[in-house]
Image (cartoon, helix red, strand yellow):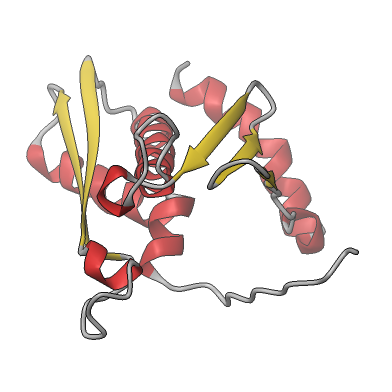
Length: 170
């Protein structure tokens, strides 16, 4: 896809959001079912059912997906798509590219072993390796705009309002 095709594809969508901003607000949803026989949660992805469980560092077998890995995978997927879309819009040729995310966890926190240990990632590093003939200043702009427009990156960077509820469906 080239920049003109991308602009043509997005132009009517952007116009509709300018005239009716409420149309741009949607709710994405995820659904999972708690496994009754083991410590796991089955997730519907729309394409397959995935099973998440405990990370081996917390007693898991490693047979199920780790939700921490899934968070990093979501970041990589979103950042990769955003990078490519921004590069396309800016007409920056990327002949090759990889995206990597690494995150540091102290499992003492989630296991309640040390109250001073954080629960969750203490640091996440997102790395892009690209092959491009674009000058460095354009690549710097590409990174800046990718950070700005990547939904998952910004959701981690600027904490959204977060609530949790539990109801007894008995």
